[in-house]
Length: 388
Image (cartoon, rainbow, N blue to C red; front, side, top):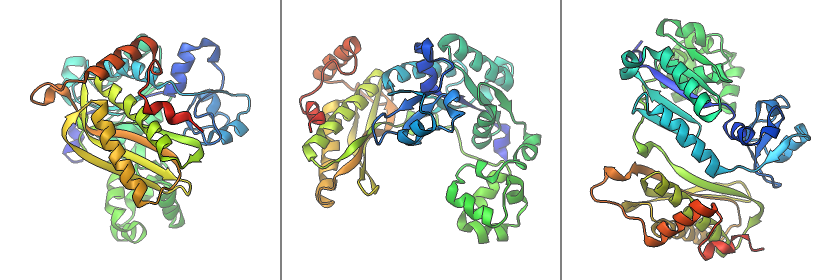
């Protein structure tokens, strides 16, 4: 193994996070098939409880299809503010064991714990402590994988679901990987999986033992990458910097929207929510990102880096509006079925010289939202977003 085998990476993945939070807050939902996601004709499943998964329901499935598979299920819309609240509790637990935490989403993270092993009694002890703390402090369960690198740690937590712990030691990597389906490799989707299947490569072990020249004939310039994974090799570092994170909100519409004023109103509401999250977490962002999908499912992404980092709604919206208008005019005003706004290049405020001040209006609105919820007050343009 390479130097990465000397590292110890923990991957924590909450079990059916959104659905589990709903079942925690609503005891009447426990033990029942629960589906969290958009409820409209174009809605998509965000998370399905394990009871719902027995019916074949899974995340990213159209809600209308989920209803056919599980007509007696309980269908609820996501409550993102509540999920973010629980996520902050979970990530606070991670920080007790290492500052090297790379959040992949609200419910999933890598932890580099190599320097913490002696202090906490080893990797297995850390994994058990984290899982126990999550259970005791949030009432939720998590699967934990422990391995020498990120690929193996994530794979291990997948194999440990729901609620278990799986540790992969360096001398047992081939024993774990070889019998697994090749689709278990990170990045092998339907298309690549079909290519490998046609070539008779069904397991990770078969790909590992394939001569490189044959792998290149099948996979082209990706051959070396996938064969390295098949050997359990992955040199990527845990990115603890906040810049590795992004925050975004997007919405799929029940009907395509071709009114630019209505789209801007929707986008303003999204930017308001993103900016509020930044301020709540004492973060700033330097890059504004838009996601636009038209009625033909053509998706475009537009981004712009700001001169200075900010968490001020007005500045973020101004850039998002400029990006939208540029796209709108270039594309001839195509009606949209999905619109999303977000930020990246995120960092903690104290990383920058000088203090980043929120506007007086933002501070006032944040206080109102804390007291009355996300819809306690809205800026003028965003009131137009639901007009027909």
